[in-house]
Image 1 (spheres, rainbow, N blue to C red):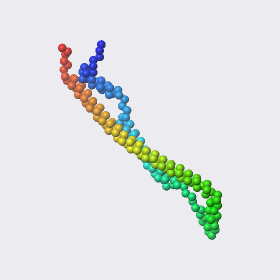
Image 2 (cartoon, rainbow, N blue to C red):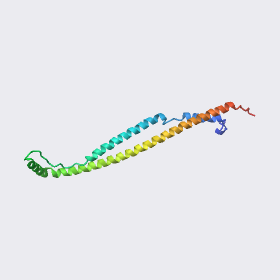
Image 3 (cartoon, rainbow, N blue to C red):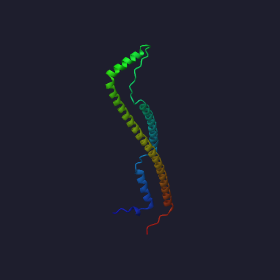
Length: 169
């Protein structure tokens, strides 16, 4: 026995099939999920701001510099500074300067990488905000469409009950 085609079914049966299909479809992204997404986006914004502040502080101290010797000792202070400076020139300056240059290069690369990462995070957060707004708009539209489907179903059921059935001829 052949199944009747969809178009051969009465309107009420078609509406029932459509309703069953809608109700059996998983409802991912319900409105209940949106506040948690919005809250996460706000938390991400706060963390990005904290990271930006930390990065600004790191940039200000990223360059390591040689510090001159000083002495607070009265009278002999200048002599102590001269002896220590001469000794530093002979013993450490030639191996400390290359390490300072290496450390400064590393610090510059890391602050640049962090700055780029921060920019990526900001763009990602912006995309998250836009997608959240889109999801909210789509959820509102889905609610409206469900309401319209319910109204159409009610009108269809009402129309079928008020229309007398015709006997097949």
